[in-house]
Length: 322
Image 1 (cartoon, rainbow, N blue to C red):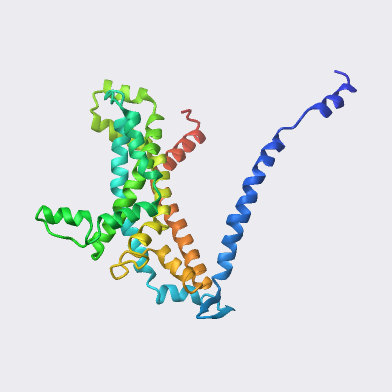
Image 2: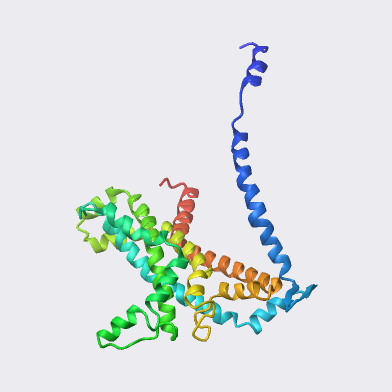
């Protein structure tokens, strides 16, 4: 090729690498405007005294870390955080168990279940219902004069005031979270199970492993990445729990604020007194707590894979081919 034709070819060649960055511009623009700037503004407001007292606006006055100190010393943050974690755990534990069993059941080729499409649609439908509608339905069903208590009285069991006692209210919130999200979790776990090589199951059957051993030795270890994702996203959603207990208890967290979550308390700061300082401080605290818990869960569930990677790296350095 002549030296004259080479520059001509270079001018005609098109670089497609820049288009990847161009297509990322809308995402980063939306992220900066709707996420990064509000996050920075929240962090900034957390250091100021800024609230409404009647018709009078107080602040903004810089007060340093006093909002954080007040939340930890006077606002019973530990109580609201404990309420949130209890209701999330009560809903998540049966959710992951039932979803895992359904995922294995639906993906087992030996069972040959008929009407799988119908069952998958039915279990996913509660996820499509608005949480506010779900909460209003349960409020009517389990109220003191509702049909559930009428049925209990007819059966001779007696009336139980679900919305008056903490176990009843927390149990209803957990039940609603379970019903709304177990279908979505089932679909996620099904995708993970279907991604497992069927040759592993065939080999286990040849070696004489039963269904229980196959489940614990093959399915569960290979599902850890998708289970880590499910657990972390569910935990983040649980810590942000608001709409279901807010509507079920009319925002009061009855009884005796035993069902009030952290985000319900945040709503009280912003919705009544417009206390942007306390609201910002609580938001930053929840951000830090969520990040720490997510990191701990991720490291715990991926510890074995990290150790295996280190062993492979050490063997590779020693000249051992895997």
